[in-house]
Image 1: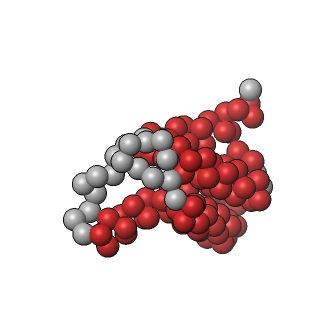
Image 2 (image 1 turned 90 degrees about the horizontal axis):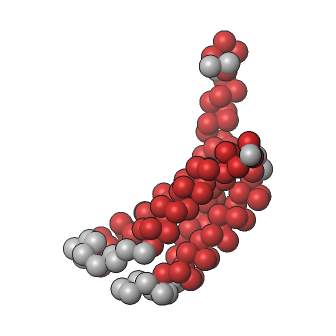
Length: 124
């Protein structure tokens, strides 16, 4: 049961991604470029966040990245069945970039920052 608690943020976030993928994107952005930038930025943020939540659960980088990418593949498949949406393999590559950026952020920024904190703050 305790292990499941670690996966709860990931599960909730995956449900949120599923919900967003079920919505139409008509009306987002006024130009083709603006629409592209907005939607692809969402992909990066969604999957960077998912990778970070999965890292919290798995405690290892590779399983976190693999599971997040597998979910990205299934999400694009899901979008093929949503009216007004289309699943694109190219989007999974943007998701993979988000996954990579999220894990790099944790590894090289937050962990380094944490290691520089005085010991009295690490117990908080």
